[in-house]
Image 1 (cartoon, rainbow, N blue to C red):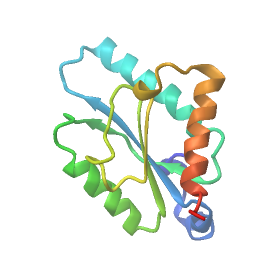
Image 2 (image 1 turned 90 degrees about the vertical axis):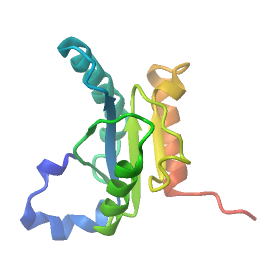
Image 3 (image 1 turned 180 degrees about the horizontal axis):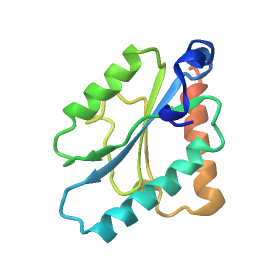
Amino acid sequence: MKFSEVDEASWQELQPYFDTCLIPYTGLTGKENPMQATTALERLRDFMDLVEIPYKGRIITYPAFQYGLQQEMSLLNEICRNVKSTGFKHVIVISSDNVLQSEDVTEADLILSQTEMKELDGKELAAAVQAKIQILWNPVLPT
């Protein structure tokens, strides 16, 4: 569900069910021409469908973090931290074209990067994404 689909009157009732926030990271540099920017956004949209569609009742997608040179992740970390302070238990950062390192985006609970899963496609990619989310929600505790 997109953030803009939630109205104020129903948020109090729905909030306990939405424990996970999805933050899309496009990572545009400003050097893209309009067609390249459109293509990048379409790739991200398609990758996000693998999360948004199966988990529609549990995940809310926030506005995309459009521009960013990967060297500076402090703003993305701050956004993740702030989103958690509003009541979300988990924050997932998702990107189709960028590899984000967990040591750089320490405030995210999960980073999904299609670039890192480039050898997968179709059902295999969907299954890998869903498995990562399930592990986030249901961590295996050491015995």
